[in-house]
Image 1 (cartoon, rainbow, N blue to C red):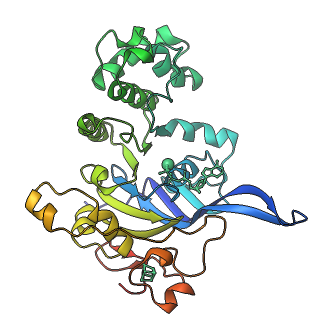
Image 2: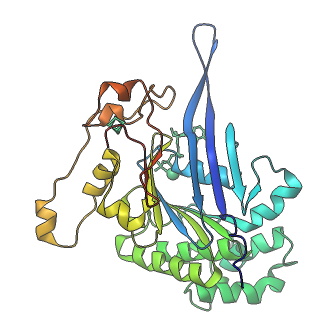
Length: 330
Ligand SMILES: Nc1ncnc2c1ncn2[C@@H]1O[C@H](COP(=O)(O)OP(=O)(O)OP(=O)(O)O)[C@@H](O)[C@H]1O
Ligand code: SF4
Ligand SMILES: [Mg+2]
C-alpha cells in the first residue's frame, strides 16, 4: 500500500498583514496614520496540532487570530484553511468557515451574555447556523456538551453570574464546540483565571483536542502558560514573528534575544535553579506601531544590536529541525 498525498495543514498563513486606520495627521490632515498591528506574518498549523503564540501586550497576537477567523480585514497576504484560500471569501463561502473556526475568549466574565441561561448561550450558535431549530431541539446536545466540559447537570438552567471564572470558561468552551469546529483560536483563555484553576482548563482543552481532533492557535503573553499544551511555539514582537520552534527546542535552546528574555521570566520549579537564573529585563521602549523602524523591530531593546540591525530587517530564517529565527547576530 502506498501512502496517499500528505493533507495540507489546517491553517496556513502567508505574509499576512493587518493595519488599522488611526485617523489623519499633519496641518492639512494630509498624512494617513496606520497602526501596523501585524506585518508580514507566516506560519502553519497541522491538523490536531497546537501552535502557541506568545508575545507582550500589543504585539499583534489577537489581531493575528482574528484575521485568520476573518473578523478583521487583511491588507495583504494569504490565509489558507485546509489548503483552500479563504483570504477573500465572502458571505456564502464565509458561513461554513464561521462554523468550522471558532474563538474562545480571554474574559469569561465579559464574553457571556448575563441575561441568557447557559443552555441558550450554548444552543445559540446551533440555532444561528441551522443545526437546531430552537433551544429545546438542541437540549440533548447542549446537556452532553456541558457534561463533557465538566459542568454540573443543572448548569443549563442557570445564568452566568451563578458560576466562577473557571466554570464560565468551561461554558465558553462548550459554546465554541457547539458546531463541531475543526480549528479554535483560544485567545488567552486562562489569563483572567486564578493560577490554581488554569491547569484544569488547559487540561480540559487538551483532552477535547484529542477527542475531537481539534487544531488550536493558543495565545498567551508569557511562556509559562503555553508550555504544557503547545506542540510548537511562535514568538511575536511588534507585529512580526521572531522565532518559531518545536516546544522543547524553544525552551531548551532559544535563538532570539527576545525569546531568551521571555524565558528568563518563566518560573522554574527547582528553587536552587531559580536562584541561579539570570532574569533578563529589557530596557528601552518597544517601537511605535504607527511608524515601526527600518531594520529589526527589536533593536531598541536588544543587548546585541549592531549597525546592520538598524537598516536591514532580519528574515525569519530556517535554522534546521523546524526551528526558525529572525536575528542577524544569532
Ligand atoms: N480594532 C482596532 N483598531 C485599532 N487598533 C487596534 C485594533 N485592535 C488592535 N489594535 C492595535 O493593534 C496592535 C496589536 O493589538 P493586538 O490586540 O493584536 O495585540 P495583542 O498582542 O493581542 O495584545 P494583548 O496582549 O494586550 O491582548 C496594538 O497596537 C493595538 O492597539
Ligand atoms: S537582529 Fe539585531 S537587534 Fe534584532 S534581535 Fe538580532 S541582534 Fe538584536
Ligand atoms: Mg490580545
